[in-house]
Length: 71
Length: 184
Image (cartoon, chains in turn yellow, blue):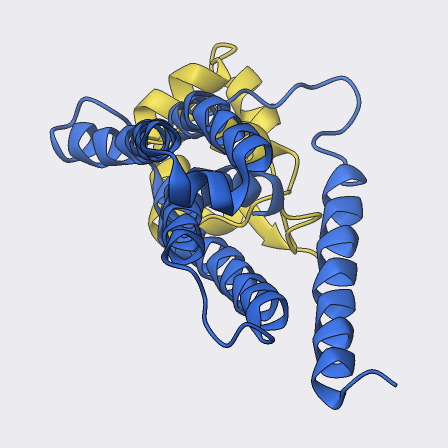
């Protein structure tokens, strides 16, 4: 696993804001494994643009509202 | 005074050994997850671990038989040859089958491989290639140095080299997948 991806994200907060969605539910919704969701939440994996867009769509947001480059 | 060939061989062996130790230390000291949250195992990762476990046992048994009987025993005793060949075949099948099954099940939609899994699966052959290269260099140096005075390499030694390289090929792919989950 990568030490630290240069992306931070609000996935964990957004999950809880969306009816306490579990990591597995989000993984099923976007077609990835729970391991990938865990690593994304820990900023240890930088997703592809397609996966980032799928995640943003689940929460009804744009990609920049979910992901941001770490300054 | 050692020959230039022996000095170069020793230097290469030290270089390869130091690289292997450095890689092992690096892997052991990686933090797999921050405290408090356990990273779940991915389906492909579980299959790769199963392949290593099921293929590793007959591989160790093969090595034990070869260490016990030696190349001379392999050359002279048909029972040793048969046993080594059977164990090697079991290793190859047990090591390679889970990866083949994973690819087929993923193609049929029965196994979820996401973008990270696919990337790890695609880059695992890099680890496999390096391991095979290292083993081939080691075997070449060992056979050359050991049998140089005799002027010929016995057929048994060449066969043992072939079987061990095939077993390594089968086990190095799941190993590459397991390493991939630790590093990507």
